[in-house]
Image 1 (tube, one colour):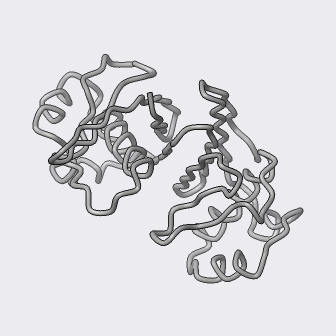
Image 2: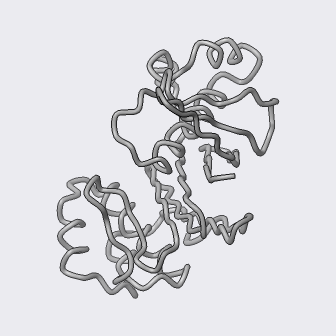
Image 3: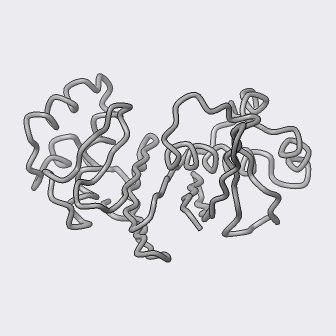
Length: 208
C-alpha cells in the first residue's frame, strides 16, 4: 500500500505517510536513484532499513521533489536546496516525510512496550508525573516522538532529552501542544502536532 495519510497544515506544511507492504524491487519502480543515493541504499544492511529508505524516496517523488535537490548535511540531516525545509522518519513498515516553508521536524514510532524501560532516560520529572493520568504506552510514545521531532528541527547534536527538551502539559487526546528546547542562554518554543494511529504515533514539530 502506498500513501496511507496525507495532510496539509499551516505555513505550507505538507505531511505524507507511506505504509510499506511492497518488496524492495517494487519500491524501486519508477525511482531515479543517483550514484550517491545508491551508495546510501547499499549501506543499509537490513531489508527493513532499505525499504524505509526507498519508501522515503517514493514519498519525495509524490511530493514533486526532484532527486537532485534532496541532500544531506554534515550531521546526516536531510535538506532541500530550493529553500524549503524537510524532515523524514521511518519505523518498521511506516515512513513519513514533511516539507514546509519553515523549519520542521517529524518522528513516528511503533508502539513498543520496551519504551517503558527507557522512559527515565528521556522524561523530564514533571512529564513522568503526568504519565499516570494517561494510557502509559501511548503517552510515552507521544512524548518520545515529540522530543525526537524537536531534536530533528533544532539540529544540534548532544541535546539531553530529559532536561533540555521539555513538552508542556497537554490534555489526553490533544492534537496539538507546545515544546521547549532549553539551553543556558536561551529557551526556544515550538508548536507540536500530535497524530495518533492504531499501531504507531507521530509528532510534527514546527516554529511559531
